[in-house]
Structures are given as C-alpha cells and as structure tokens.
Image (cartoon, rainbow, N blue to C red):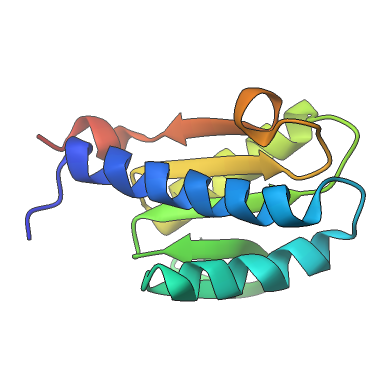
Amino acid sequence: MEITQKYINELSYEITGACIEVHKILGPGLYENIYHQCLKKELDLLNLKFKSELTIPFDYKGEIIDCMVKCDFLIEDLIVLVIKAVSEFFNIHRVQTMNYMNLLKVPKAILVNFNVKNLYHEGHETFVSRYFSQLK
C-alpha cells in the first residue's frame, strides 16, 4: 500500500472517530489514564497497529540521550496521538505534540482533549509536518 496524503487523512479520521467513541461512552471529567486505556481497546477493535506510551529516542550530537520523552500513541507508524484531559489546550500542549511528530519523523499528529462537551467541535486539533507535504 502506498502512503499518500489521502491515506493519512483517512487514518486520522478513523483515529478521531475512535476518540469520539470513547468520549461518547465516558464523557468528560475522568483522568487521562482512563481515556488512554479505553482508547487502546478502541484502537484494537479497529485493528490499528499502535505503540502506547512510546519512549522517543533523543539524539544529541549523534548520541542517544535517555530523556524519557514519551508520547501517548504512535499509530501505524504514521500518526502521533496525544491525549489530554484538561480545562483547555495551551500552547505547551501544541508544542509538545509538534515536537513528538517531528522527533518521530511522522507526517501527522492529533491532539485530543477529553475534558470537553463535544470532542469533535472543541476537543481536537491536527498538525502536519514537512513529511506530509512530501507525500502525493
């Protein structure tokens, strides 16, 4: 299968749908780790390959430094998914998400906040990297 912008967009639609399903069942107000565990189940149901709480290697002058930088999910080795349960997104959440995407050299990232009334309209943001623009 060829990795294209269209494929990445369809995959991100599936991932967002999984987040909406978890949110529809659980609603807002729970701890992030509860959403995380339920989302793992939902991604399994969709037969998506993912890594959960992935430690991201950090290269400094050619040496891997153990910084314990972890992202919530890397899905299909193409999309970073960062989940939050906060009152609102702050720039630090966006920067963190973009850093994970760039460190892992993937084309897209999704930032999701489960602590909202409507996840689709107010609880998620997507980001693309330079790798996305290089795809057909």
